[in-house]
Length: 115
Image 1: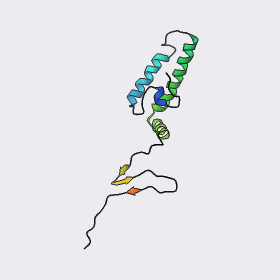
Image 2: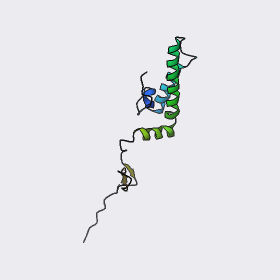
Image 3: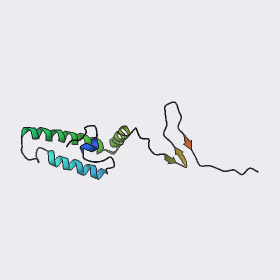
Image 4: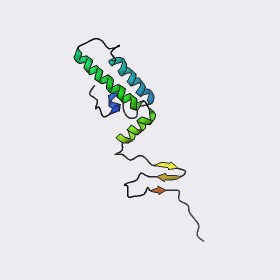
């Protein structure tokens, strides 16, 4: 496995769109493959690699397996792309562009007949 250690999804062999069930399945599969009680006996070098994969999988699952921690991780790693606008009671809120600028709010247009 040549996964980037900073990408927890790659450690589990998944994409960021993985469902909680897919995350759990990938974690359990890695545990079966790399746990000392289930892996075949081999060279010490193979054991060290398997132990490292096991530690990475446990670390990745500890974050991605918890919905709140996964949301924080996703927000931290995907902060370069702005989130889509969210509608709140007919008002559309856009992401701030900088700390000195207030958020942009765009509500429904109301036409008034002048007469």
